[in-house]
Image 1 (spheres, one colour):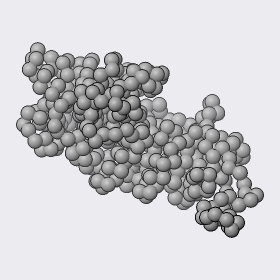
Image 2 (cartoon, one colour; image 1 turned 135 degrees about the vertical axis):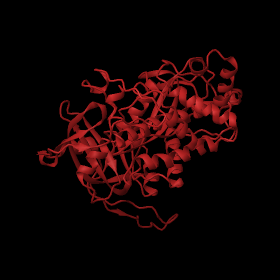
Image 3 (cartoon, one colour; image 1 turned 90 degrees about the vertical axis):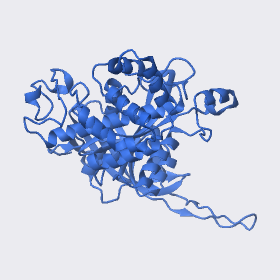
Amino acid sequence: MEVANQPIETVTELELSVQDVSGLMAPLKEYHGIFSPLLRRREQREWMEFYLQGLLSPEMDRKSIEPMVLNLKGADENAVRAVQQFIGEGGWKDDLIRKRHWVEVDQSLGEDDGVIPLDGSDFPKQGRESAGVKRQYCGELGKRANCQAGVFAGYASTKGYTLLDARLYMPEIWFSEEFEARRRKCRVPEETHFQTKNELAWEMIEAIDREGTLRFRWITCDEAFGCDTWLLDRIASRQRWYFAEVPKNTLVWTERPETVVPQWSGRGCKPKRAVLAAGQPLRQAVEDIAASLPIDRWSRHTIKEGTKGPIVADFAALRVINVREGLPGDEVWLALRRNISTGEVKFYLSNAPVETELTTLVRISGMRWPIETCFEDGKQSLGMGDYEVRSWIGWHHHMTLCILAHHFLVRVQQEFKKNSQPDFAPSGAIVECRATQTKRGYPNGPRCPGLSNHS
């Protein structure tokens, strides 16, 4: 087995959090000013800035609306109602904000071979009144529970990572006659119809691609998305490269079988659809292919993968033919990643070109962790799961502002790195860098580059 000594870089980790910086009012105002012209009313612009400030405040354990107001404005019931109206009923358009956000992400993180990871994130909820809530599998709890399910698109490049878009999954029962009153109460738009999570994912990808302001080449996903050939074929139709984890029983051919159109018997309609010719090789499950590969087809690589640190794994890749409606489809990559400790193998299919190097496939296999880290940061620090609004529009408004808050941290970190002189601090900001011995492995002092004189 070949062993590669050079570690493969994936993504720069986001090292700043709301616990690390405070008092960044001037940069936050400047950042808010990018998006505020997209809100028509002065009050909306003011509450947007307030909400972002609340999400980025390190003083609150829970970032729902009432604690935000109490912390930033004092006991003001009128302010609570105003913010509830702004988030839960406000007429401002998420899509306009997010489209502008994609422009900013391209400026801060964009690369030609950028990656869009797709993933779901769930939010446990009590009661039955929140839009889309249902007893269903909840990833956060690891079991079936009452929750709302979201579908998210992120972005990752060598420069860093953030979130791009979000959709609330509405279970099919919510579109039944029984739920009509509940849909109205939750302000679900009348034109909304049932869509699977994969259809929601494709809707986001299509919108980002159609807008054309954000550079990307790859789309990665776990097997919940990767097992859907409908989704993979649509990604390929946009000349984008998917790198999709697939179940171990996924069937492929290791060589292209011949197909023929059966001869007409003289009765009925003439056959038009091809079938497999006699004596062709059988399809094989990807786990059987992995098990039969000789040792010299594997190579060992070290990947720098997020907060886990360097990960060593064995990789192999070969060209196979995917299956579409029982017939041979396109030639694609089958990439295999084996855990050297447990022997567990993960399986991926990719429509990347035939000339793609193994090291590239290895790197892309390590590009899904950023979106999971976005969820972790969002829920632990940015109040992503703390919302108490019940409406469909409220869920999307809240997620849009959480997405902007996360990207603000990304921009601030880049400013710190770009201006790493000891006396640097953003204009008008009081910066506090709190180093700890346990936070993500920085035991020896301040984690913020160039800020040791301000800690």
